[in-house]
Every structure is written in structure tokens, then in C-alpha cells.
Image 1 (cartoon, rainbow over the protein chains, first blue to last red):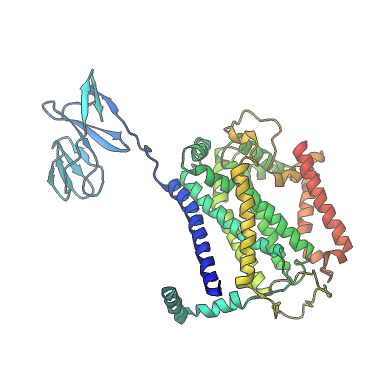
Image 2 (image 1 turned 180 degrees about the vertical axis):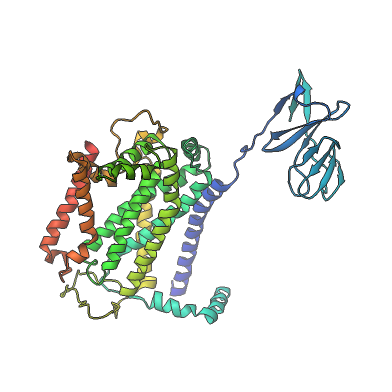
Length: 139
Length: 367
């Protein structure tokens, strides 16, 4: 075996060992820093029916984010994500106008979550819910 | 390879990187009889860097609040993926770093490297030792376990022995009359910001003095082992015909670091709780003092000294005197001889001192 091929062989071996060592350090580090699955609140959220009055909104934490329940005038219930679809701010309920305002960039949504004005590209995400035995279960 | 060479060329024409590499790496010559003990500093630098990195990672999940600290550490150990590994590397690493630091100090002592003109290297090294002890002591409290709480209570309480100022000093250290949430805040700030900044600055000074004075020649395998420096003017100790730092001694350093890592990781993986008594797994309770609370192994001799003397002030003064003597050693031991076997008084004192320290530590452990 001449010197150059011996050097190449050693370089390959060292490179291989170095790669294994790097992976052995990088993988635990990546796992340590990765967001943990289920770190946010997940599953269902139960809210007493009486807490959501007509024409009002009830904000709550859902799946690690913010959500809102609205009872429209007339009694219809709607569950929406409270995260603005523009840049992720939390929308505010305007009781007098019966709509949502995003205070960050002036986005407007109707009580159903549809965009009525401003920069939001999409409506607010609708959330599934059921009403049973005086409780509203979201999720 | 061509791409790497092009990048190096690009940098070289701008900042003359090849000239620096020639001067500081390949052209930086070390004594031919240099030995593995000279790698202890490199191991310490590596160990400190590892402590900094693992410490930063722990900060992501650790909560410095007396109500939440123990829970957050438990979560790091049990819930966060590889959290146990990061924490064990940090906790075991601190013990290993103290051990290597002591070995570094012993090698400097026996090879007479502390003698003039290297007094400043010794003094900065000694300050580093004190700061490492300080960072270990403050870090000990952070998990907010029974061990943390009561070991800190005992350690801070020893300042009480200082006449007049003692009680005020204890309260100042703790931030309250007893160890409590204010103590955690203070120790956390000292552990993650104040002391690390001090250590970094002192490492920089230590390396600066090393570079300016030059590496000392080991006294072994030489006819003339007398210190050649006469003190007339500044001279850099050169080693013509010596071995280059890079690649020769850098590989020696790498080998020493690999051996250190093998021992360190063996403890982390096979005996991770070697340095953890059972009180380290119980949350702090200010109303229940556990029996036989003891400090870390490197404080056992201090602990035992305080126990031997009925008067705490005498025990504390003796420790202070011993530490001051050690800190000022290059100014006290002014002989020109560097070979340990040609310095019988030094050998008797240093070996005796070392055995006394080990003996007190074992006594402290068993008592």
C-alpha cells in the first residue's frame, strides 16, 4: 500500500468516525431542543353553556392556542380559532358591532369568522363542538 | 479541497491567516521533553466549554423559582428527551472539572512551573480554582433539593464565625436570614452570569501570561534543572529545536481529551449518581433537616476541619491561612531548583499537605 492510498484510507476512516460522533452529539441535541409533542393543551375543552351569553364571546385556551365561543344574537353558537390568519395576533370581540377586530393590523371578521375588511387572507378557523347536558364541548 | 483552499486564500490575503498559523501553531515550538501533564490545561478548557454549552441548554427548561425549580429539574430528567444526558453531563462534568483542576495544580507544583517569572500564571490559576469552587457551590443550590438547601445552609452559615461582620455577611449572602427564595435568585445570577464572566476573563488572563512568558521546560530528563530566569528583563522562553504545537502537541492534547471523555462518559453512563446522595432526589423542605448532610467531595476537607475545631473561627482562619499560603507560594518558595526530587523540604510539605487533605476528606466522608 503506498503512502497516498494509506492516507486516503485513514482520512475515510477518520471522516466516518467523525460523522458517527457528530451524529451521536447532534441527535440528542436535536431531540432535546425539539418542541415536545402534546406540550400544549390538547383534547377537548368543556365550557358550561350558561357562560356564553347571547351576543357575547368567551375566549379560552384550546390545543395550546387561543379559541373563542360566540353566541350570536338569535342564539346560534360558533366556535372559532382566535388567531388572526394575517400574522397570528389574537382577535378581539366587538360586542357593539358583533364582529372581530384584529388590533395588530386592523383586520375585521364577521361573527362567523369570515373576513370583512383588512389584510387577513383567510377566514378564522372553525372548531368542532357539541352541546350536551348544559355543557359545550369543543374539540 | 480546492474550494477550502480558495476560501483560505481569500481570508489570507486580507488578514494574513497563514502567518498567524505559522507563528501560533506550526511554528510555536514546545520543549522536546514535554509530557502529558501539560495537556491538563487543554482538558480544562474543553471541560469548561462543555459546562458552558450544557449549562445554556439547561437554561431552556430550568425555572429559577423556589416553587418550580425542583419540578423543572425533575422534568428535565424524566420528560425532556435526552434531558437526563444534558443534566448529567453538567453535574458530573463539574466534579470532573474540579478533579482535573487539582491534577493540573499538582503537576504545576511538582514541576516547579509556578516559580518566577510565572507567578502571575499561578495567581490567576489560583483565582480560577476559587471561582470554580464558587460556581460549584452556587450551582449546588439550583436544583432546590434537600441536599441543595441544607448544604447551602451549612456552607453560608460558616461565614457566621467571622467576628462582628459574620451575621451580616451570612444574611447578605443568603439575601434573607435563612436560605430561601431570595438565595436562589442570588445564586442563580452568580452561577449563570457573574462567575462565568469572571472565569472567562481569568482564563483569558491565564492564557495571555502563558503566551507572553512561554511554556516552561519540564525538569525531568535534564542535567541542569535550575530556574534560568534571573529577572533582569522580560524574555520569552523559547524552545529552539522543540516540537511544534500543531500538529504534534495538538494531537497529544486531543488524545488526553479523548481519555478524559472516556472516563467522564463512563461515569455518566454507568454510575451517573456517583456524586448524588439520596437527599438530592427529595425537594427542599425548610422544616426538615436531613441527617448527615455533607458537602461535595472537594469541600469535605474544609467541612471536617470545621468539625475538628470547637471554635469555628479557628477552623476558618486555618483554612484561610492554608489558602493564602498556597496562593502566595511563588513568592514564598523562591529557590531556583525545579526538580521535585532535588527539593526535599518541598516534597515533604507538598506530599504531607496532599495526604492531610485526602485524609481529612475521607474522615469527613466517613464521619
